[in-house]
Length: 270
Image 1 (tube, helix red, strand yellow):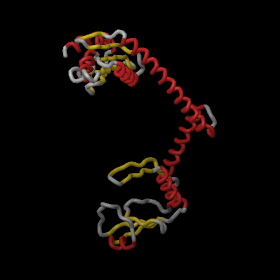
Image 2 (cartoon, helix red, strand yellow):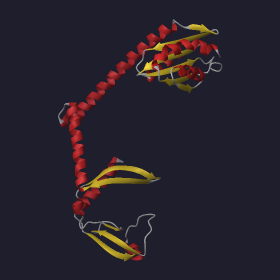
Image 3 (cartoon, one colour):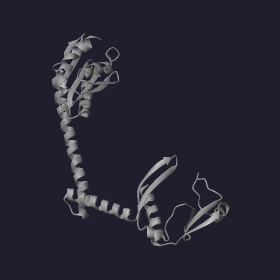
Image 4 (cartoon, one colour):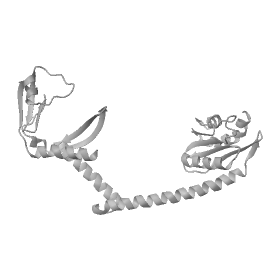
């Protein structure tokens, strides 16, 4: 956890500030182990080993420390931690000038953040929370407006439904902001048609989004996945999904009218 990482940093930096002496000795492996030296799990050691003692704090088998005192390390700063095996974490850290540079980088980023917020550093956090709350309220208002707009659009396209093979079919180009909004419209359409098929197509940020919904009484004979895939092929895409609802994407927004016009023929083939 973040608290455990901070504690690890504090422990290491405390021993650095204590400026403990670093001593190296060559001992037999048996002597080193008897003295309590820490060995790395899975490491292979020869009969003679290099033992590094840091004051009375640490004693390890190690081949590569190059310090006389821990104070030479300067600042110790953890930069990341990750999993390398089941139950084993790897902690990565930097020291000395690199650690200082890292702190300066964090300070620069904080200053940039404060400038963007146009607030004093001491009140930047409060202003950020205020902006997030305002954004949440605006998003709720936008969702409410989109739902109202979706309802109006659904009512409009329902009035233009066609009958194909004795089935109510709705195929329309919808004005929406993204594929998520189109999916929400499809859900509303499915609620309103007790028996029928709906194919909604839209330009979602320069890409074509297609959703097909089929009422439960028709989904076996007219699976939504097959319908949406055929419609999507016209706009340079493909897709699939459940028998009652399926989605697809496409690349060619200029073909949207052709895709909508082809829906009666596609359904008529089933």
